[in-house]
Image (tube, rainbow, N blue to C red):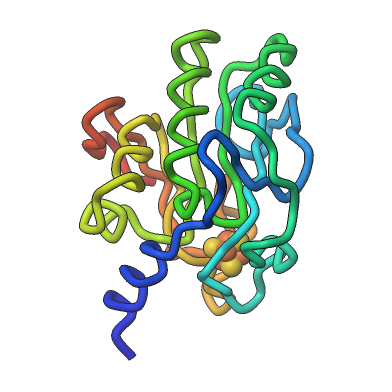
Length: 182
Ligand code: SF4
């Protein structure tokens, strides 16, 4: 099986939403200390094409489930989250809603001074090679936790990650350059 080709096909299958909307799998969270450094708001996206065996959130796979929410409403809710240091995109797979995620990422950085992290079942290399909106979203981040969850490599001792293949990549904002790998 050609995982590389399959991954490129999967990331091309973006969730279809009307302009200015995002599909979420649950309510926004605040004060999280388990989805990145500091005290973080968390946004749970709906829709994932990766279907990793052992995934803890299979209800987030369906591209048509969850809640369709105006991006403006998300920004309004986030503006009431005081004391946060950043925002983390979780899923589901944030990179199949890359356009809406980038809009939110840019806004919270500019308006609230937050840093922005995202999880992805795709690797950094696949996102970069595919380019387009997923790469633009990646360039708006400070950190990416990348790669699919692999049950055989599960390791509960890792910071912010579920399996050994996944990496915590610190990124240079606006260029996407990798600054460090954990
Ligand atoms: S990428 Fe994440 S949400 Fe998607 S199937 Fe894998 S573990 Fe689950």
